[in-house]
Image 1 (cartoon, helix red, strand yellow):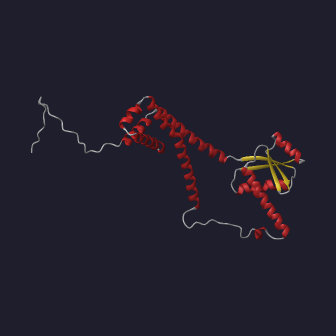
Image 2 (cartoon, rainbow, N blue to C red):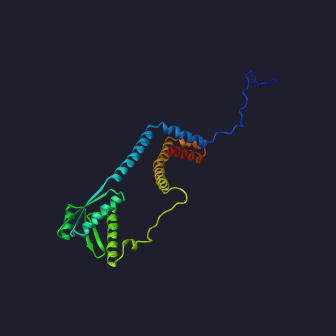
Length: 255
């Protein structure tokens, strides 16, 4: 079977009509690929990404360093007996719970002298007895870890003292107060690690969303200033143009 080509009056062959049955490439996909290829070659984008990664790694390192740092506090008091025993019990509790907290007791002759030493910056906290037990005074703030340890130590001391007054043992008073978590499936430590990793990645996604929303706006502003968007708007629907930009930056953010 032979194929006959149509010719012009001058004898030149007429090229065949293009195949219109082939589906055209989606405009949003073209815009997406362009956003990705242009951004990965942009020096400012590469530098900003490396700086962001350095900041994230630095924040993780600093957080780990601060978490492993021991909190040292000098606690002043006017009662060198019960208050000093409470500080000693708090240090033992910190060791038992593997908390990086170390308290040093310093005795003064009166409550006023202890408060004056706190105002002068010679000590960090003042532990004084009051009607409800003890008051922990700080100059501008009170570390939460120190407050929690002293509160638990004071509760244990009060429980032992009241049990002695009643003539019973502490174990008798605390019997039935323990709650133990039991899992039928899975592992408690793995579940805690999964929750921690989920929080970390959620934070990273949040940071990516905060960082990569500006390139979309800057890209639109640049095309508006260069009047490129007017040319694109005649060939590509505005929604597909915006969708391509969002998907392109989403790919970069996820990467």
